[in-house]
Picture 1 (cartoon, one colour):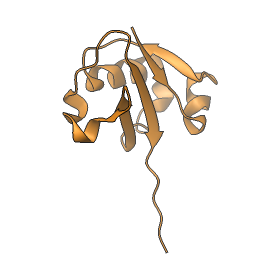
Picture 2 (cartoon, rainbow, N blue to C red):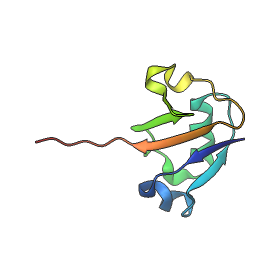
Picture 3 (cartoon, helix red, strand yellow):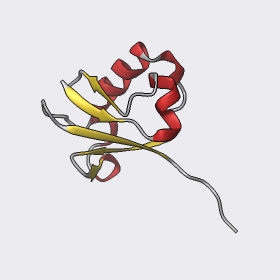
Picture 4 (cartoon, rainbow, N blue to C red):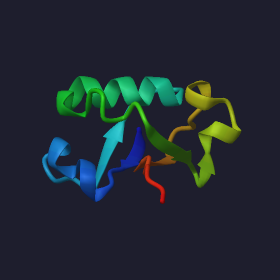
Length: 83
């Protein structure tokens, strides 16, 4: 299993959990596992920034980034704004 850290803005969708276990060999698999167990996350992860062991997956293989057993995945909702 992989540990996924849930940001405060998404914790209501996971029953308040700060971290949840997830299964999958890629980031895509992990996100699908999360949304299957926590349907309220559906659509809310679409624009989330995902980090695997501190590395932004956008600089790796995106959702096809491999996730090793025991890795830590961090979800950060994308922020928008400007002046």
